[in-house]
Image 1 (cartoon, helix red, strand yellow):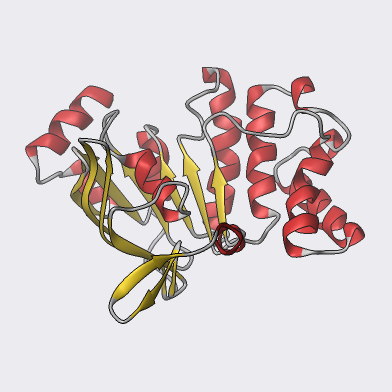
Image 2 (spheres, helix red, strand yellow):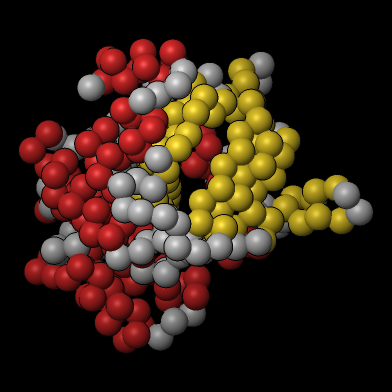
Length: 259
């Protein structure tokens, strides 16, 4: 655990419900994340963890409730007590402030590592190419891949691809970085190199929400651990409370299986 939150609320999730047909995946989720804080979400498969992340940047539309990033409604505008969905162009602009790292990297296979990092800042933020490249090279150095700028994704290991994906998400200087099981697609020997990068980000004040099954990582870097099951937050609190002295039987059962 790294200590107390250091800033104002950046992510505010309020009463979020999400269904896919008759299947209720989220059932009224509340979550707040402060600037510089790391929140780790744990839970069994099907508990709604990944869906929650995808609602935060409006990859999935909520059925009820709302989400704010830095005080701004995501995906909607409010008028006279009602919410109206934004146009896709407006949603894309909002997403530039919400970094997302997927399980399976999602790099552009036809672009070099450097171009993967430069694409969004140039296209979405209209940054000069030279400025975007300079930022990209600094980020590649930060994730230990400065020598891979000219490589293509297929020439990299899974761990290297995921580190590039993290650098690409940071290239837009997002308010919050969302990581959806960032090590789940990796061979066991490659997990450590990705977790080391995320730990460095945590210790340097990057606001993050991380869905993971890596309990040791949660214990080391999280300010808040959230345990979800059945589309609800069962309990949340500091790592020492949730991981070492959970109050709910469902949390204890889950941890008993994964520890």
